Length: 84
Image: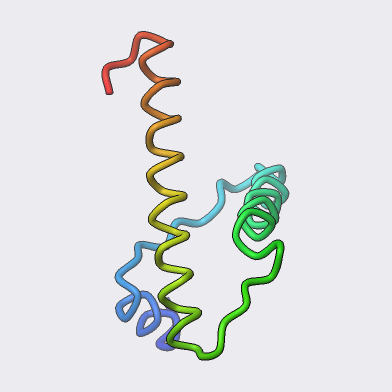
């Protein structure tokens, strides 16, 4: 892993996962998910007066999104007989 990438990954505490080789459809799927999230979070455009306010608003939105999707994932799993 390149030095810049390694330091970025370490700073943000993430584990990079590459797309599956020979599965070109994954790129389009990821781009679709990014677009969906952008539409949910930034349309209409949030009105804030500072970067600090934007970061607080975005954190609240991300937490709410995670709770909504977690609940939906649990319901879907239970409906399929998968323990949640």
